[in-house]
Length: 130
Image 1 (cartoon, rainbow, N blue to C red):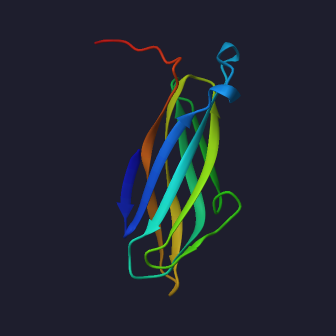
Image 2: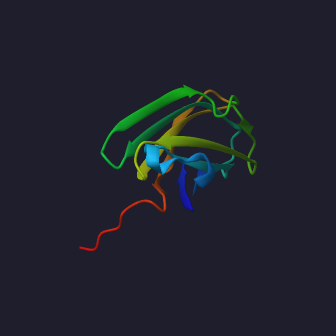
Image 3: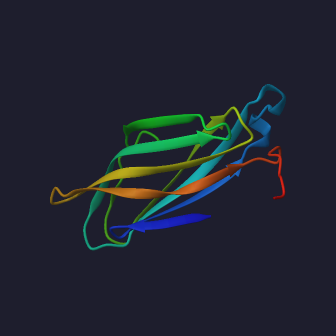
């Protein structure tokens, strides 16, 4: 599990390799990632936009931007949390993801919350000892 707190918003991510949706012989590897966003601060916040920076083992970068997460723009009161699961495919057996969530408070303040960098590893990743 990977966790990071920015401006009293804690983001925890747990990636899972999806063997049943992957085809290693075709260089197609799929992961699910479960995210928990917890408002540990005193203000009501809303997640407005997301940004993902995904890098595969060859260094190929994919950027994803859009409104909300999984079609929602959740509002979190102090002490509340929101959880969702999404996924990403890669053409290599490993990679890394990180990102940000654009948040807005109920009084109009806007800020970004960091999503911690998390590793996407499959059982097909070759390991090397240095």
